[in-house]
Image 1 (tube, chains in turn blue, red):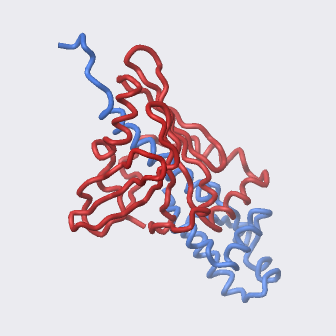
Image 2 (cartoon, rainbow over the protein chains, first blue to last red; image 1 turned 180 degrees about the horizontal axis):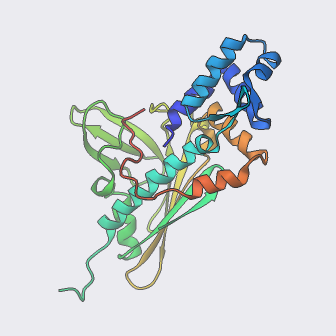
Length: 105
Length: 169
């Protein structure tokens, strides 16, 4: 599971967040992004690397290029986290609150 | 136990074999009896948990070294049917002091037959936890790939032993 804290930390950088939001609109290669953003191509690559390791973007080979797109699994990380957290917690609560039935002797 | 989808909230429900009053009491004053003792943000080990039973109170974790962590404000306390508290922990696992950046948890207790109680827990306003989440929500909320998003969030093994833990930021 993607760690939501890692994902949110990755998005705390404004340039990185802009790249992420740009990729949400349409998948793109490093070169396209480097032309659109006022940062160097190596810098764009570095941001993509961080986003990828945070589980927020994914890449795919398209001929000689790598096309990056937003990874929906990473996007859902925060909700997943709390979902699992509360499911496990309520299961424990249920065990603690449920009383033995009278008929069972 | 089921979980529903909604963009910035999570709902989980369960049914317990106990009257409403008992279920409410175990959830609140008995919180230490069921809460996972690893789920805290103290430096020391967790010694006890205190649920102050009134609106304006707190949920307090006490460490074995005497330290204290008030990680929730009790927003509503209506025994035996409803309790609501804030989630004052940010996603870097520190106490969030700005209430505008905290989410909230509402729990309702409803009779579901003799000696049977339905408990519904909703953790809402998750989007208040900062810029990163808002970006993610906006990227998805724009209509882009929403089906995939729903699919990914829906297909989650509910009993993943390696699940969430607060001590691992």
